[in-house]
Image 1: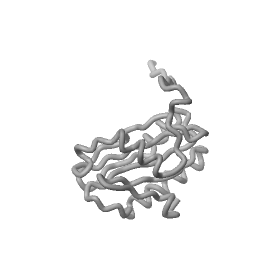
Image 2: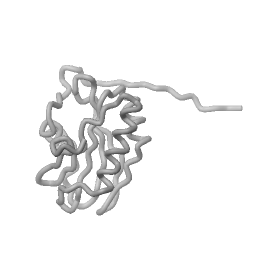
Image 3: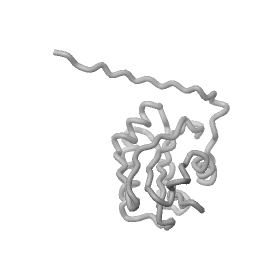
Image 4: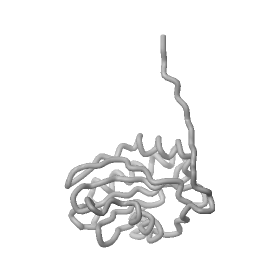
Length: 146
């Protein structure tokens, strides 16, 4: 019988002191703007997760899915696998709305609740869910939805 070996490895080439610190949704949005593909922001929906350490410094940003013009699939297992592997204490969910509409859909709200519940079990805080467009952003936390 042969089985696969599983290794959990986390390596960072960025010194902790150089990692951006997130104190607000605006801080997160500023980091996201630098790492989003604005050539397709109004064409294809993307879902990413910002991974944070206990001091709210950015450990990394991971692409979770690339969808179509009206949606994308965000698999909670993939999100939490990345969070656990990076030893993140908190995460910020992020996706764009190609339509330019910042209002969260019911699917956005349901996914946020589902991932928040999973995060509570794993002791990984879901700090925000940010929807971005080419012009602005919407924060679930700022609107009291988390």
